[in-house]
Image 1: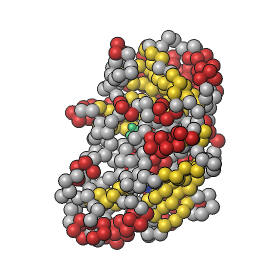
Image 2 (image 1 turned 30 degrees about the horizontal axis):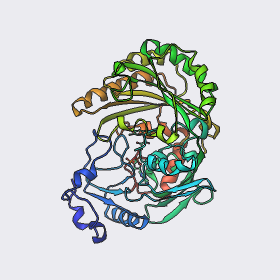
Image 3 (image 1 turned 90 degrees about the horizontal axis):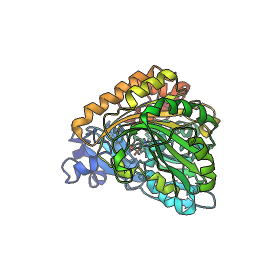
Amino acid sequence: MDIHITKTLPETIARRAITPASPNYDEARALYNGMIDKKPAAIVPCRNADEIAEVVAFARESNVLLAIRGGGHNGPGLGSCDGGIVIDCSPMTGIDIDVDARTVSVEPGLSQGEVDRATAPYGLHVPAGIVSSTGIAGLTLGGGHGYLAREYGLTIDNLLEAEMVLADGRRVTANERENEDLFWAIRGGGGNFGVVTKFTYRLREVSDVLAGPVFYDTEHTARIMRWYREVLPSMPRKLSMTLGLKRCPSAEGFPEELWNRPVCALICCYDGPEEEARGVVEPLLAELPEPLMNGLMEMPFVDWQGAFDPLLPKGLQWYWKGDYIHELSDGAIEEHLKFGTDTPSNLSLMHLYPIDGAPQERAADATAWGTRDATWSMVIAGIDPDPANAAKVMHWAKDYWTALHRHNRHGGAYVNFMMEDEGEERIRAAYGTNYDGLVAVKRKYDPDNLFRVNQNIRP
Ligand SMILES: Cc1cc2nc3c(=O)[nH]c(=O)nc-3n(C[C@H](O)[C@H](O)[C@H](O)COP(=O)(O)OP(=O)(O)OC[C@H]3O[C@@H](n4cnc5c(N)ncnc54)[C@H](O)[C@@H]3O)c2cc1C
């Protein structure tokens, strides 16, 4: 590890840097995914764009590896690096809500839950992901999908503007009128183009929701998957329904007799009053066998957003594999039955997140995230608290994915569901026909690839 770089850090950076000699080094370098153990030479908490620009300049001039950390949630730990410098955005937690204009500006150290909790009192939300502790920055830059995607699009479809520090030190604004090419690229292209110091989003009105998981015996899995692929496209967009193959969590709030039992899950969220929601959801579910558990209840959207947080604390072992899915073929369902109905641990899962509806209304080249004809973003996540089980959950995820992948016509996945060992071809496939455009923007804004700790677009 190149620890000596800390000795040459300019004094203004060195005095706030956390290095291997600092008592809080291990705490500061720990990432959400306990499987990743990166040891940067210096972690530099930054409070504003000036402090970020200073670190960017030092890394550029000293040719030091540079990582940018938002929420530190990334699967392969791309918010950190070995031996280099980490720009740690966590002190940047400013938020500015304009209720009349229905916009919110947020700094990159916030989690999506912190954004949700700040906007919820106004009945307004940024469409984002489904676990509160995820960083709003990395989630947005990869695309961002969650319960509101079918109704309001991806997080990037609600992004109005970003303020950034570029590789050459310039501070710029990117939106539909200024630096439009940069604005296009950051909507899906990750942290390849600069450090975002502020995001401005359009806010959406979201009332209470009817939400919760409905669990079925796995003997019904094939029937439920065939039903799901048929009915999803015609479901109202206010309804998000994720299909999951997993086990009932062994946790408070779930019937003890179901703990650890493999289940086929429909995870629902209807944005609307309870009576209207039940009028839509109940007739749909009536087409299916009797569930083992029906956890649907009315609640504020912000509560549902945080509902899975207690199950997924920081430090678990995670191995992710993803794919975009257009059709759920009978052949694919066969593979799901083989791998998904006997997951290797209580938390391991396969989720099919619906991205039909609003995301499909935009052209494939409207943003760098271009797979706008897919129906689902799939994730297979091997998860376990015990490092001794890391290899087991990783092999399960890889084998499951390998068996399924040949049934998918798209070669790529959502970049936020990819690990670091997937190779350049997978990154190209993730962006499809937008890849060449991303390379052109990279050459313009970061020709020396200073920002390369990410799913890298090579200039
Ligand atoms: C439990 C869990 C649930 C998830 N659920 C969802 C979901 O529902 N929907 C969804 O879309 N995704 C989801 N994800 C994936 C998530 O979007 C990614 O893990 C994302 O990378 C997390 O962002 P972060 O800021 O926390 O990550 P970090 O690890 O801090 O950074 C991730 C990447 O973004 C870059 N980056 C971070 N901040 C900046 C910045 N300010 N400027 C430029 N680049 C930056 C980093 O360099 C790095 O390459 C989930 C992840 C987890 C662990």
